[in-house]
Length: 439
Image (cartoon, rainbow, N blue to C red; front, top):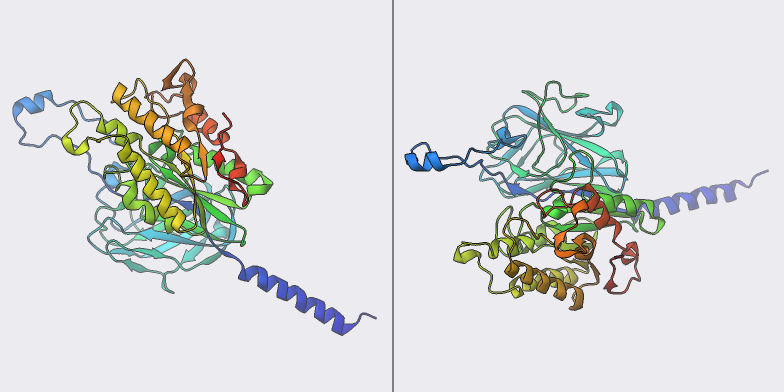
């Protein structure tokens, strides 16, 4: 006969172990995007002088979703995000960073995405905020949803749907979403299996993060940078920017399978001055230090400071005294991360010879910044993306088979090569400081 006390003791012990395991779980970001101010398309003023009107170039076609730059009214916005790690519970973060008015969210849902705008119905969850299904986000503020039980898949797609009952005004946006967003004609469709006859965009609105409840060993890597981190010119809806390729490698490797990577790149971003988004120095605390579970950050910033600061006819405010200005900005961010116990991976700036605003002066600045990244000892590890991307016959240029066409941005193959060059051992606990490019 089984001993009832021993059997009960075993059950109690198993329960105790389960409770300890749950207690050690913590929130880790599985996806994120940096908020930006919605930009207006440039137009020639109606009363512009005739000569100016005649000389003005035809305006380029507006990007998908440009009609939403003024906001929404009585509409549902369903946004698709691609996770890195999975988890058993989830919460989202909404930001009203760039508005002078409160944002009213009527209803919000999260679900596993099926295809296009369709969700897996059984996975649909209603989100609440402080116990209520609606919320009002003050100007400049952010809000976390209450957590919901949801089996979040790793490397899977989630659909986050927001119903916006009134006029929102210009939204807080992440411009280069590279995933299709679906917008209803009108009404609350957050709980619907799909959104019929939806208008589409390639941006995210107000949504800046998705966290999952993950084991104590799980952590996040923030990929912090400009358009090359944001994935400019990669194929939309295919997750082919370098952080996405790196996520695939991390999760297929047993030693790093508990690591998330979140992309906090902004196309056009600079270290020193506001441009597309506030400067890297201004957004670093928000986009890196405040992320859930962050333990590492990669820094790939500075090429836009160099390109714009050395271009012909640049106004005095754009001019750089030397590459030391960019170096000083990178050092500041590394020190701020180290203060918070976050390890920093310096990434060399890739070449753009033949591209817009290229000059010998700009190339000299880039080389100076890269020498400092490689030799200063500031970083816990260094990844030499320059060595991966440059043409061996002309190191001022990107390899032709990696060139997306503008001589600056990599194509899908180039982004994959960047991700493949990273030695995953730098993300293990005992990793020493070292240059970790495989090239």
